[in-house]
Length: 415
Ligand code: AMP
Image (cartoon, rainbow, N blue to C red; front, side):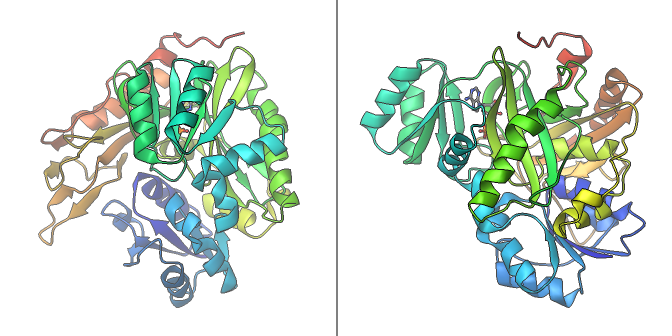
């Protein structure tokens, strides 16, 4: 099987490692890729959000499968353009990707499918914003309605900050605050059959102890030792299958990766958000534990044959990833700094570039992450931090508490 992987971040580096490790994948091309991906794939230039360009590249490299990593190309219709060429693609249509592309659309689908989620209003002016904030009270949750690379959400006790974010975004979804530990559940689906991966947890806030602004994600671990028994089965029954059925009913089946972001509240799991693609950095830990060949699994989802795919196999133990971010991230990351110690197994490249002379430099806010597995969560965490300690990047920062609350048994599930 010849595979074209679209994207160039940490998630795509993790996907590339998984695909390259599948004996059925005879050629892997990544576009645009990154210096880490270059070790396992041939790199090609492409504008990932240009559907015609990606489809043409898929034809040129004779791809049997195109895997679309990020959300922006999906929302732009890249999967539709590739499918129109008769090539199998892992990733939903633009219509179905609205589950991520529009918070209002996602809420509408959830309401129709009776999926448990936060009560919410879509607001377009200051009066509506004020009414919604009054009704729900603090902490206030204000979400940009469109794609915002994980940074369009403000959760705050500060009413003025909530109002300011709403005014900056224009159209927002304001919703009830959900309390409880968060879970990221990835589900591979062909639109009908659906296979859950291991639940993971990520860390959205920039600072230790979940302080500071939201980011794209500062680290992750899997599996979750504290997850309530039956969690995945319950979410498949109450969230995933009703959502997939509702999208089929609307004539826009969702095939690809359905990312369910949940809060485990005192009244049970509630959906915080859907994404239409693998999460970053949870992918790094989930795929580190997946033993089943990745190319075959994604191909089955892309060709409507997931129902006959064998059950997934997982490695024992746990995985942890720690993100190293550039100086100034998330507000205004500085790029162009020299990185050393990063060309090693376990270092996943996210925002890096390489000079002609081989020097590696930062090229994004989240620069790289140290990903390690171990016989248990504590061992995996220690190994991930050992990787990060050997990386040098001026002004960089990372959280020092990834997975620690879970290791210490400090996460309690309400109820
Ligand atoms: P989202 O982009 O919707 O995943 O939101 C980013 C982060 O904001 C989530 O991972 C949560 O930590 C937080 N968040 C979003 N919605 C809510 C909510 N209704 N209640 C509590 N926290 C939320």
